[in-house]
Image (cartoon, rainbow, N blue to C red; front, side):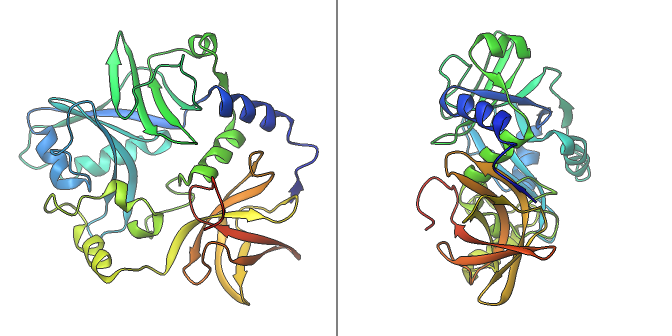
Amino acid sequence: MTTLRGQSGDLRAGYAHARSVAGFAADTLGLFWAVGPDAVSYLQGILSQDIEGLAPGQVARSFLLEPRGKLDALLWVLRDEDRVGIVTAAARQAAVIASLSRWRLRVDVEFGPDDRRVHDVWGPAARVPAAPGGWRDEDGVLAAELREGPVRRRLVAGLEPQALEKLGAVPINDRVVDAFRIEAGEPRMGVDVDGKTIPQETGLVPEAVSFTKGCFLGQELVARIDSRGRVNRHLRGIRMLGPVVPPVGAGLSYEGKAVGQLTTVGESPALHAPVALALVRREALPGSRITVTWEGAEIEAEVHGLPMTGPPG
């Protein structure tokens, strides 16, 4: 347990610059390519996104699901003419390649990492390479728009840190990245969601799943829940109603009933409060007051919809 006072200097400086200009982090995102004559058609039958329906230069979210429909990976796909770029968490890149390779039978497709340095860039800076609404690869530098809007996120590959700093960006640490992720509602696989998570619990299905493309791995569960209309948990933002920062794993209760636990915890200078992500049971709707408890301590908090850029609801 900590408080905002005394440990917010680096966070606030990096956050403020990234919020108004840009900040970059290394080792958070990975980029690899599916190449070969069957690259597009193979991924069309595996991933939840309509790969064939994307135009070259487009970026879209996607899921890689297990056969029973639970999450295996959170992805973005970069559609090219005859290859597909796949963006995922750097720490999980090898595992994602292994999962995709498992279903490769009598198809001509190979997976290989991009050998350029990859940076995770947050903020609106016009001088940092950008490709609004899509991606481009020019003069050895690739830029892909992963999230637009108030909490903008891009992948930039092919620039060294010094080059990004010359363009006005500053390096940011995990605390700043976590603050942006929480505000934006960007879950991390293995932290906020895992192999037990149903896709609809993430809130990303409208962006990541095509219900018109035909069959894909794990489709049955996703389609069944879509027709049923609800799940028991939802990824939510949690805003503490006080300056205390609870630990990861702190329990959440609503009207005396356990409804979840904190998965990523951070501090939001924009919201002037400690914030967190959590998979919260559906009865604790956005706007609900909840109690966060840990090791004999507790604090009141408020449930927010995602992204956390406005009122709770």
